[in-house]
Image 1: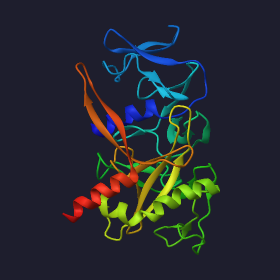
Image 2 (image 1 turned 90 degrees about the vertical axis):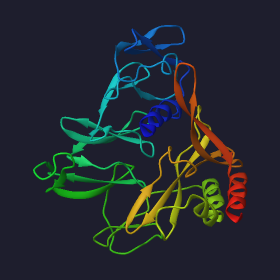
Image 3 (image 1 turned 30 degrees about the vertical axis):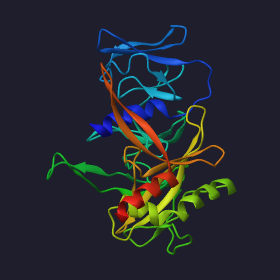
Length: 308
């Protein structure tokens, strides 16, 4: 439940847009959800939705695209854009600024601006992780052995980058962060940075051992990477830095709801924070609120605790 509520909060709060018209959710008859602008003009008529509760009514929409019902995404003009890709745990959600969508029983990729990055052409595709995804064409789910958790079988498999370009694995490592596949080939490192962004990441590299010691990552090797997955925007003027852990040939990216394992840096590159979500109880509803702590203050406090 924490993951679901955090997803609703984050998806409606932190994706940027540059448009003067303000949009707000409104609730009718306790179960109908719609969208109107600051002047009360209805952009999307109220419709049945699983998202209706006291916390949603009047909430401002701070994103280029947004959902009214989990299975319907719209742009700020009220136009339906796509249906998110369905998973065993519900509809897909944004990962590293991208979301899978479904069309004609195929899967593709949208970005947070509502732009198609990959047309719906694959039979299956993983979420973006560490800047790339795995896909297959001609594969299918085999429900015969495990109806609840079917395996994917058959087809042609490959990798595609967050830029929508299919990746040709190499036979040797060309960058320290190239990802090694099960077949001992290498996926080229997918991130590129300017000098300012390199300086931001260098701040975290210098504190890597301390951060790893405090957070106690799952893998004993404690091989962690820091990558910028989103840049400052109008409504969230921070760089977003995500932590990835490499362990036994698997790379895991920590989510926004993984407290103290993701970070934010001010647009000028001078203020560094670790983030966590706090559940705040109001009279009529509860909501997750993002909190920020200066990283060096957080490190000093937690290392002092470990020495006692």
